[in-house]
Length: 97
Image 1 (tube, rainbow, N blue to C red):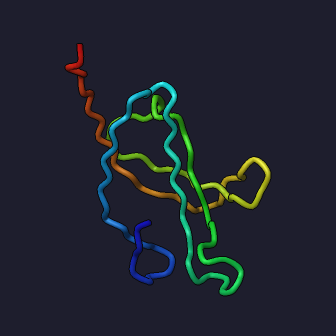
Image 2: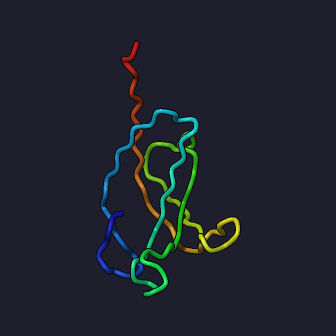
Image 3: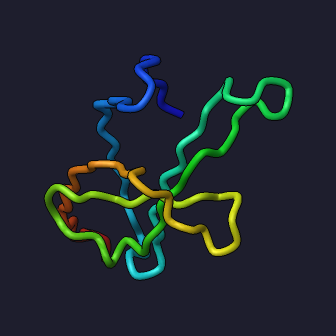
Protein backbone atom coordinates (compact mmCIF):
# COMPACT_ATOMS: atom_id res chain seq x y z
CA UNK A 1 0.00 0.00 0.00
CA UNK A 2 1.30 3.44 -0.94
CA UNK A 3 0.39 6.56 1.04
CA UNK A 4 0.08 10.10 -0.25
CA UNK A 5 0.03 13.49 1.41
CA UNK A 6 -3.39 14.81 2.40
CA UNK A 7 -3.94 17.15 -0.52
CA UNK A 8 -7.62 16.42 -1.14
CA UNK A 9 -8.70 16.33 -4.75
CA UNK A 10 -5.36 15.87 -6.51
CA UNK A 11 -3.25 13.28 -4.72
CA UNK A 12 0.20 12.60 -6.13
CA UNK A 13 1.92 9.30 -5.46
CA UNK A 14 5.09 9.45 -7.61
CA UNK A 15 5.74 5.73 -7.14
CA UNK A 16 7.31 3.17 -9.45
CA UNK A 17 6.38 -0.50 -9.45
CA UNK A 18 8.06 -3.37 -11.27
CA UNK A 19 6.49 -6.77 -11.89
CA UNK A 20 7.72 -9.99 -13.43
CA UNK A 21 4.95 -11.86 -15.23
CA UNK A 22 5.17 -15.54 -16.03
CA UNK A 23 1.78 -15.95 -17.74
CA UNK A 24 1.22 -12.61 -19.45
CA UNK A 25 -1.88 -13.79 -21.32
CA UNK A 26 -3.59 -14.65 -18.03
CA UNK A 27 -2.32 -11.76 -15.88
CA UNK A 28 -4.61 -8.94 -14.73
CA UNK A 29 -3.61 -5.52 -13.41
CA UNK A 30 -5.84 -4.31 -10.56
CA UNK A 31 -5.32 -0.83 -9.11
CA UNK A 32 -7.27 -0.04 -5.93
CA UNK A 33 -7.63 3.36 -4.27
CA UNK A 34 -8.26 3.26 -0.51
CA UNK A 35 -8.92 5.85 2.16
CA UNK A 36 -7.82 4.75 5.61
CA UNK A 37 -9.81 7.32 7.57
CA UNK A 38 -12.73 8.25 5.28
CA UNK A 39 -15.31 6.41 7.42
CA UNK A 40 -13.73 5.72 10.82
CA UNK A 41 -14.81 2.61 12.72
CA UNK A 42 -16.37 1.04 9.57
CA UNK A 43 -13.22 -0.28 7.94
CA UNK A 44 -9.51 0.17 8.40
CA UNK A 45 -9.22 0.60 4.63
CA UNK A 46 -12.27 1.88 2.76
CA UNK A 47 -12.28 1.07 -0.97
CA UNK A 48 -12.88 4.27 -2.93
CA UNK A 49 -12.23 3.26 -6.54
CA UNK A 50 -10.54 0.72 -8.77
CA UNK A 51 -9.34 0.01 -12.31
CA UNK A 52 -8.78 -3.45 -13.73
CA UNK A 53 -7.65 -4.75 -17.12
CA UNK A 54 -5.81 -7.70 -18.66
CA UNK A 55 -2.07 -7.07 -18.89
CA UNK A 56 -2.08 -8.06 -22.57
CA UNK A 57 -4.20 -4.90 -23.21
CA UNK A 58 -1.59 -2.53 -21.72
CA UNK A 59 0.23 -0.21 -24.08
CA UNK A 60 3.41 1.74 -23.40
CA UNK A 61 3.30 5.41 -22.53
CA UNK A 62 1.06 7.69 -20.53
CA UNK A 63 -2.50 6.48 -20.02
CA UNK A 64 -5.52 7.98 -18.28
CA UNK A 65 -7.37 5.30 -16.35
CA UNK A 66 -11.03 6.04 -15.60
CA UNK A 67 -11.70 4.71 -12.10
CA UNK A 68 -14.78 2.70 -11.18
CA UNK A 69 -16.97 2.57 -8.09
CA UNK A 70 -16.47 -0.69 -6.14
CA UNK A 71 -19.82 -0.30 -4.35
CA UNK A 72 -21.91 -0.54 -7.56
CA UNK A 73 -22.83 -3.63 -9.55
CA UNK A 74 -20.54 -3.80 -12.55
CA UNK A 75 -18.37 -0.98 -11.21
CA UNK A 76 -19.88 2.14 -12.74
CA UNK A 77 -17.35 4.71 -13.92
CA UNK A 78 -16.90 7.57 -11.44
CA UNK A 79 -17.20 10.95 -13.23
CA UNK A 80 -13.99 13.04 -13.20
CA UNK A 81 -12.10 10.34 -11.27
CA UNK A 82 -8.96 9.25 -13.11
CA UNK A 83 -5.39 8.13 -12.62
CA UNK A 84 -2.59 9.26 -14.92
CA UNK A 85 -0.09 6.42 -15.23
CA UNK A 86 3.02 5.84 -17.31
CA UNK A 87 3.58 2.27 -18.44
CA UNK A 88 6.91 0.90 -19.61
CA UNK A 89 6.84 -2.67 -20.88
CA UNK A 90 10.00 -4.75 -21.27
CA UNK A 91 10.04 -8.25 -22.70
CA UNK A 92 12.41 -10.60 -20.89
CA UNK A 93 13.37 -13.80 -22.62
CA UNK A 94 13.82 -16.92 -20.53
CA UNK A 95 17.23 -18.63 -20.52
CA UNK A 96 15.89 -21.90 -19.15
CA UNK A 97 16.48 -25.12 -21.08
